Image (cartoon, rainbow, N blue to C red; front, side):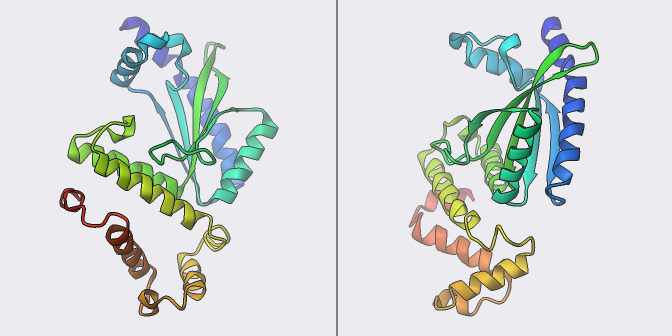
Length: 236
């Protein structure tokens, strides 16, 4: 535990340095972006070492002890940020789960960079980049895990919930690929253009606000995709 604590702490200054660089770069691309950083909690490190013991996982090979996350407004800004980071050679692409989503519907881009700590030693820092829509999906998974005592995030749990989040991710992807969502930061403008495109749909004609549209879309998804899955609705 002393070794683990030392190794974890040795990532702190490298993480701060990486975060400051990312903040400066990101703010020039997306003024609405959200950034966060964290050192992996000790119990999480121990659990990961146990979980991947058969694959030879060691502290020295664990790349996400220090981690940053950037949440951008849309897919266009995600691509712009990735392009800039490649140009600056700060991070290397590890997994592109946006173009190649995980089976459960998870979407994000994972990159790894190496930065010096206060002792001049290189430490790996993981960077996750996603859109606000993708982050909402991931947050919902964590909340459901918490309140239903499951582990959907680790790809285990009730099939009904797995199917729900997989289908929801697919619907979110359709929304994100909309020209309107990627061309405007204003929900009212998005809503107006969205309505214009689907003006012949009866269930949208009486919709007056963006919140009403979201509620109707939610009802549509629950009614048409999930059918009569009472268990899911009761858990909600």
